[in-house]
Length: 442
Image (cartoon, rainbow, N blue to C red):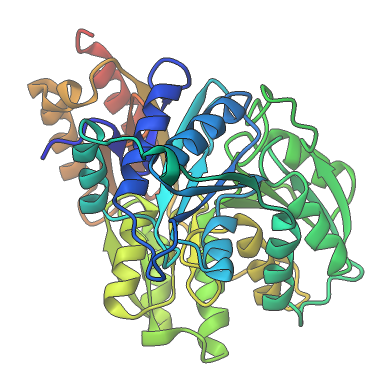
């Protein structure tokens, strides 16, 4: 069936316009109706959110929908998205709801559902929720559920991180953390300090409207400047819900997800903690990543863009490590979803006290990535002139690089990515493709 609301990462859009309180209530009610508890109790549903102003409104609507369907809504407050699967498992809950639009601007918000196993719901399950929207009914008076605050959730999440990285000693490390004025603003500085690091925190004062506003993993200038000016060892930037992370070395060079995954893969394999001897990445992974993994004897599986598809591939193959160039890194030895804070700590574990600026996990092919904002993503890509331009540029780079042009699954943009032997050629090819897309009438 055609999906009306769910995209590649839950429901996402402008809060109050596309992601409304009515929609949130309806989805929560439908999802709770479809959820059963093995013990015969009322479904226990975790609700957490990031720092967006609209989060409180949607949290109230989700809670109302859960209770109206006869479930108990347990409000965990502001927490990173990756805390959800850990808490669901820890408390033995039946469903989790995360309210966040990740790296999007504050005006957007989103709704993601997690099952009792801690994994995001499947496409099929999301379709069932949509189908149940129109037919969802209210519980009778005696069966209406409760809404309760769930205390201690931040400490429980920190405890999980500390347990996983108990052997990591960060004393003497000077690190800058850009918390994006988002869900990482308390958790990230705290766990780094507990492990001994000297922490300088940026964008750690959310006001409901400044999340991702010129900061975080999609706006690295402030982090780069802070690391270099302060003589820090390195820095990490998280996005609004802290499920992704990018790094900056002491020289100010940005280290993306491809390099971080390569570093982690070599580290985990050396410690015999890379089940199956493989990693899963998306079609966006740099050609240099594939070259490095092939040289190291590590198998690589490629998926479509989206961390959920990386996770599906990992589960199908029995592997443990994968992720995206954007900084979503999944390490199933810790969590069934991307965790930016855990990924930063895994990076430090892999470095074993070494200098990130002297990493040698892979050599990147120069890459240029541009997002072209459009009114209709599919129409642009279906245009004959655009298709011809893509074919022409791809043929010219065959054997030397590649072109990837695709619609975003979460934003009204077409993403143009070019890899070529030199920066100048990558930029020139990308500029021509962008011009072809922009030449099509809106």
